[in-house]
Length: 313
Image (cartoon, rainbow, N blue to C red):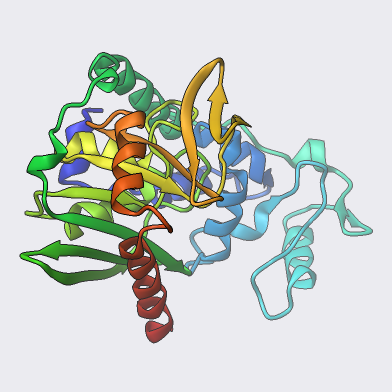
């Protein structure tokens, strides 16, 4: 898949999960992990549970057929909960004792036909990193030419996303927002595919520096939300996260495999290289622009996204 695809299209992981569910034979069951592996990454197992819980077409997508890998029936989004799930499973020939499927091995199906979409997406990030690694080692933009600064944040409730972009324009603080359905649940390491549809629409025509609430190169494949977004939009970005994804902290520097990939600023926030600005340059810029505290513009974006979310619930 060409990275430019994401400049015009939104990837729909729900479609892939539904296609897998439709393969289940009538008298079978499967597991969250089996579906996650068929999607291409076992880390998506929790997201599979989330997507199942949001199923609105029980006749077509038979979510009651999905159990835990040890045979436990688990929860069921239904007024009668697990009791109804057990009733349906028994109707399909499952033998249930003490909340677990006794004939689990006999009933379990995992022979899904799949092109493993998450594997393709992670490979895309790896390939993109390999293609731009030399550019990542240099400052591509002169920040003195980028007078405007923007910050983007997205909050979620159910399957809806609430995106806010706060930015400076001619000395004024401006705000844009968007509310739309999210077709990609949260999966560690895949935040770009969840949030870029919002960022792409919010940041349209903006020509300044963007502070992203998320990681940049501090990512398993070195292409986190801030880095991928900046590369595709050809804009300078800096990643500023609220929690450490991985790595060890030594003297306020995040170290992974002997490399400095992040810096702790304002006591607890993690700054990582986004796109077009090296880590040292990003840290120096933020230190000069926001010497005392986490950038107010990011606080404003987060506050407004939460407000938008609460107002719509």
